[in-house]
Length: 297
Ligand code: PAF
Image (cartoon, rainbow, N blue to C red):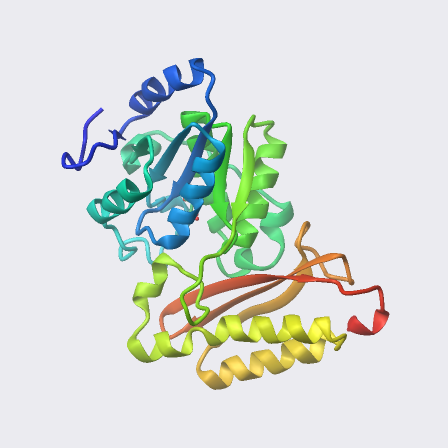
């Protein structure tokens, strides 16, 4: 084990052998171990996941790995923010037991030949439609992290709502002995969902960005007032386009399966849109208010 940030008391494991040797005695002692997988560039959203982990586990491990396998060649792998020292400073403030920071050669050594290929929630026609390699890359790296760290609990942000559904399916399908839990989306004061990619926004774009959350809230209020969903969504798309967004999707889906929403009890509004060169996503819960059919399309 080495310590890339020697000013910190948090043990930093760079290899699978190191993280396993660190975690083994914790497991033998019988305490619960939680893992919060991240790609670094940490913000309050990640820290809230760590706090959630802390409340439920004696030991908390945070992994930091910018996973090349989940980026398409034209995506932002090379420019994705990397700021390990700052991340460690932030983690120090919430108190964790270890950081696992493997590099690509550790995760994908020469000759690596396995990719987990998923359908189900990974083929819901949302993120997967414009990011075809994304979920197989996420599933592969998260499966590896879960095998490497062997936590009792793994926590992921609800901001990536489809990813959370995919990872719940992954552990179910592979019989991985770990509970997958979502953590609520943290927001800036103006409603913008916290994201490591928000740093890409120019000042004018940053001023427009909260509109994404506001239209979701408007649709939610409309559904609660028993208005038809399709016109609410159409109006919201027009508003976003007029504000300068280029739409990817804005849909209301079943919150559990991510399939079509036909008035199920738990719905989820999900949106993805481009603002200049930045792709933003967000989602909120929309619970059915009654069984009245006129809220359907
Ligand atoms: O959400 C993320 O930061 C990443 O997709 C994850 C889950 C850490 C896998 O690389």
